[in-house]
Figure 1 (cartoon, rainbow, N blue to C red):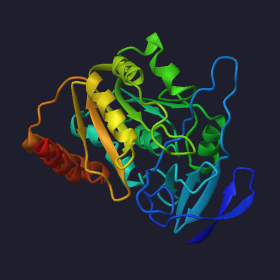
Figure 2: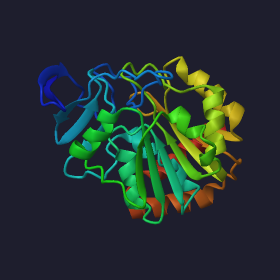
Figure 3: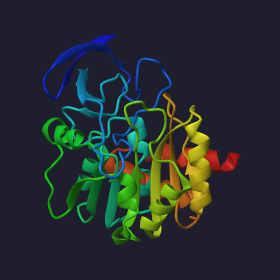
Length: 288
């Protein structure tokens, strides 16, 4: 299907884009991705693909000059998590009721950042994004609120952010969604990166990561995360191949009765499909 897309400079082009929200491009098993790009090195400015937009059936999508979907927003429900994988990125809520500090690595359309900002009014939310054009378009086209005493959107490389000693043991939650325009796998996937993420987390901190189950990068990321974290649980992949990994700094107790009760609370408060997360965790852990 062909739809019109517009860049932030308002230039129009016609490219195929999928109607299925969580897909990345027209072929069926691709990851929806984040928005960071790799660091360019000391003294050099990174080069970014153009930030472009498309709209279909009331949903606005973010792209980096390709058909890959980097994020989405339902225009009439700007704070809702439109993409299924983004909903799963909130599965840490099953284990943590009242986070005080949340960090998002890779801004995308600011969907997760906005949701956390609205859903946890007592929490401070930090989003880290390397591409300044993404920050600009999120403010102008995806209703990202301005920075205030609770919200901080930082233009910075995610690797530098997690390696800053000032962030040691600072966050209850990390949400990691780091893809560039090629969307071949997370931009940052090394043991060193995930070790730094672990260091940023508080004692019982949790990290969720968006992965692509049908790509060679999946096994590499999973191995690195399991080397660093006490427990890593992957939710079943969504229909377009995204797999969300839940990484625990301290191994959790899986009391499925308590998790079911907590899931019901989440559904009532947010309408997120938390009961399916519990079912996925049960299936995954039973199979391992």
